[in-house]
Amino acid sequence: MKKRKQLIEEILYSFHAFHKATRAKAASLGQQNHITHSQWFVLMLIGHTKKTSIKGLSEMLGMSSSAVTQFVDSLVQNCYVIRQEDPKDRRSAQLKLSPKGRKHIATMKEKRITEIAGLFDALTDSELEEFLRLHKKITSGFLDKKS
Image (cartoon, rainbow, N blue to C red):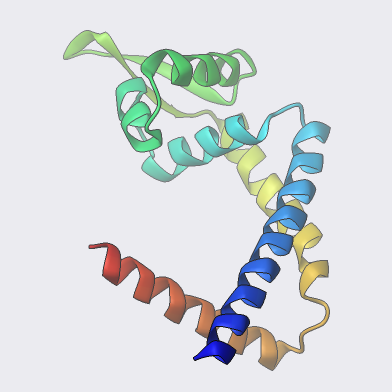
């Protein structure tokens, strides 16, 4: 049991180091494109949901509508997101990616994969496949317990 606890402690340390490295690489990519990590996350959520509202984003993020509005306003000003009035409710606007936003996400995903790939250079292709399998197993177990 003690050995297992030590292994888990090492894994946690490793996760922290990996998270720190990936976040630093993502931040440097964001600075090159004048978009913050938080704006990137909001942009990805809008892209994932296809169409949403400030209220929908604030619920997903657990943030106030005014905080989310600040992120969205910047993305709209930089033409990454389109804000459309909802014909059914003029107080509510729907948000969707602009063509520039879609292109930016595709470009950034490709750059991020290229940047992050270096972190996995220590693994062979088969080890990488095994890592992915184990990671999915852990994640799925965690998500099952959450429900």
